[in-house]
Amino acid sequence: MTKGLPARRVLFVHAHPDDESINNGATMARYVAEGAHVTVVTCTLGEEGEVIPAELAHLAPDREDRLGPYRAGELAAAMAELGVTDNRFLGGQGRYRDSGMMGLATNDRPECFWQADLDEAAAHLVAVVREVRPQVLVVYDANGGYGHPDHVQAHRVGVRAAELAADPAFRPDLGPAHRIAKTYANCIPLGAARRGVAELAGALARTPFPAVAEIAELPGVVPEEQVDCVVDGTAHAERKAAAMRAHATQITVDGPYFALSNDRAQPIWYRECYRLLAGTRGPVGPAGHEEDLFAGLTPEAAQPVEAGR
Image (cartoon, rainbow, N blue to C red; front, side, top):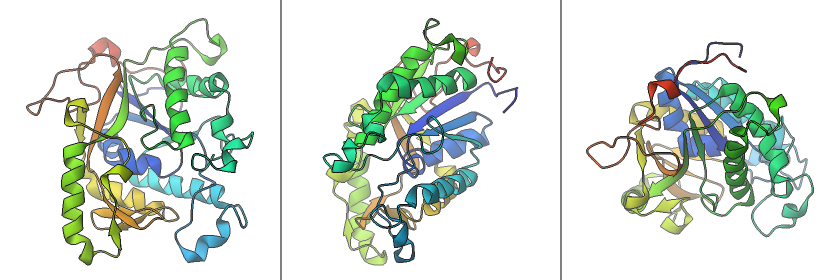
């Protein structure tokens, strides 16, 4: 990037390649289509992921341990499907290693993201924030959606980076201070989760999947009243599904459904939902929630900027 960033700018922070497409693929495709600047920062290469295709099993961490670079390629393909041109790895590709699921010995590796110094990792994100100057930040909730160490750490790093980026005394070498107007966490409304799982159960025989995921397995399920914003990305359903298919080592897609390595089917969400963690809630629509992550931002908060200014 050089200069002339669009007036609306949103930053998504994710733990591993594939998380961005599952959680926010429709939102990102919509905002790209509307001319907003979308930045995706991925914190690890996902080296500890399980590999679905048998012909790629040799990439696994207990064999050749070459899954990380391969997943970086999948991420690039997914970003191309969504039209996102600004995707980065936190601190550079390979700076932090996937920590694996909570409680595993891989959590103790000094190079893993779970062991990263919070302010050091946040400083890498501060540099991005001060360059791109987003009005909106999207992270996970404090539990990382489902308790994975890297998701929890991504939340911590994102929230801390937002705080530090706004402080003129912190690392002025990283650029002028910038205050993010609104921070959101991904979520799934409980009612939608119940309806989606019930619909999938009725259609399961027509899919290649042997079982349906339980609601407790879905990340970030919250009561309806905790949902602050719903972004309708149904017009970009095909682009989201294509982005998810690009992550073929991790995801199997069949129509409007998908499964991870456990082969338990889940709905693909095209109306993506968010909880407001920081900032002021904007105007709501007829359903009682915001319909735009940028809702309520003043014209002064949404001006084009020179990149790196």
